Image (cartoon, rainbow, N blue to C red):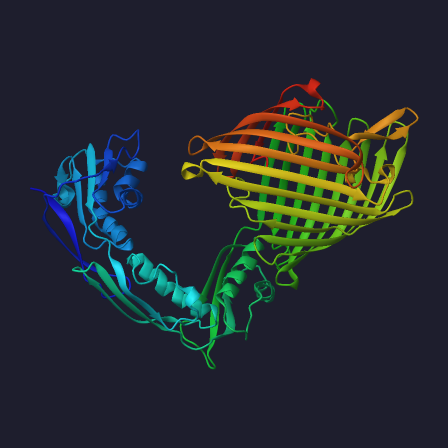
Amino acid sequence: MRAYLRAGLVLSTALGCATMALGQSSSPFSGWFGGDSKSESPVDLTVRVNGGDDEALEKSIRNTSLVSSALTEGRVTGQDILAAARGDYARILGTLYDQGYYSALINITLDGVEAATIAPLDAPDAVKHVVVTVEPGAMFRFSRAEIAPVADPKDISRDYARGEPAGTGTIKTAALDGVKGWRKRGHAKADVGGQKIVADHNRNSVDSQIALAPGPVVTFGKLNISGYDRLDPRRLRKIAGFPEGEVFDPEDIETIRKRLRRTGVFSAITLEEAEQLGPGDTMDVDLMVVEQKTRRIGAGFEISSTDGAQISAYWLHRNLLGGGESLSIDAEMSDIGSDVSGRDEEVTIRLERPATLSPDTSAYLETKLAREREEDYDSDSASIALGFQYTPSDELTVDIAVQYQYSRVIDPDETREFNVLALPIAATWDKRDDPTDARRGFYLDGEATPFMGFRDTDSGARLTGEGRVYHSFGEDDRITLAGRAILGTILGSEIENTPRDYLFWSGGGGSVRGQAYESLGVEEITGSSGTIETGGMSLANASVELRFRVREKIGLAAFVDAGEVWTDGSWSGDSYWHAGAGAGVRYDTPVGPLRFDVAAPLGNGDSDDGVQVYLGLGQAF
């Protein structure tokens, strides 16, 4: 004789409630799906489903099972398994209700003994086999699915309709969607006003009626703030940009949260709507913040077998003057130990102030000092910029600045000076699911930099664009196909009268792996001792990478990169190209994947350099 859980249903609320009783069962099982929850576990878990959508139900049951979670986490004592199994009756029942099965039989046996019959204090010392057997019974469907009044019928899912599976999840979603629809239209206190939900076990149907109570149109009242310490409360209000007096919109609440989070000043942000409306149907909002530590430091690195090492570090001071300002100092050294050039150094100091022209606009003052030691020339430069960054959402950023730059270039034959006043305008649209290890989405970045040259420096415009796309497929999205394209050109100036750091190079870990860093340029500038190799006036780069996740933290990658550089703007004149291909290993860390790539040169590049090795933090793109 076996004990089992039989589910009979009497629904009286939108959430549903059930009466359950223990009884007997001798039903045969015609289908089963199972296997080990964890190959290394001493406990075998088998899930069997008889009838219904077997495969889909088996997967849902396994995903919700506390026993499955315990085995994954290594909790395998008899007491652990018994506790999880006893809790699984209700969890599995809830999963079945969500999918419209209200007459289910559930058996969970531990080494052949029904878990529900084992007292908590009589737990076995060890369990070897756990078998979950489910007879879902007939699927219930809606005989009626009504919800009213709704702001727009399109707010309600088509799944909530007569003849469709009558899962409790569908009912709850319909009610929530109806409330959300009214809230989007200013009815902040919309709620479920009434409901009548009855299951008919003779007809395997559910009669569902939901009444919504929209309430009045609400306007924002006052913003009540607390928890701030060093931050000036007037600046806090300016950064939040609270729309006092405007019609309520739940998106405005989320926008305020995003604005405050972008400052980096706070470790916690809580926004709560007042429970009671004020005079004139106004609603106050309570904002509580917790400020985090003011200082932060960080570092990064990348190593190449021929390009040498690149190390970077930064120091950040948050809320410098009490108005949410941030001061950052970034330093980078590259080509350390390079076979083809000297060491390059760069320091950037940036002071940024949020909510300067508007809540979504930050102002910044940035200065940069750089020292480059290339194979054919040396360059020292300094720049200063005053700019504004507009961030209407987490995905979109627009930047405009006025920048003055001075650089001195020492060629084998002469020393030249470049003076430029530029107006860089940039926009970034980032829809990646994870910036450090994207599996889906895309990334677009474009910049137009008109510049005015002084003395012997020409005037013109520098245009650049970059696009990245990611697509994952296979079981659990284990395989990711990633692609990147980069284009750049300079218009209106001659190559010899253009600042050298405006010109385009190809090669190295950031463009074409397998080719030496900045190994592909052009030889257009002629001096008394011959031609000098510099970057080109136009560039095109393309990369394709196939990533495969072998285990939870370990992945493999194979890639092909290519680049071409032109002597003139608009991708015209003489051109030179090269390519590289290779493979790599990825190991996930809390701050991004650790990347190890090996690549060989292809095509017309410096193939004599042989195989290149790269070690860095984060994906190549």
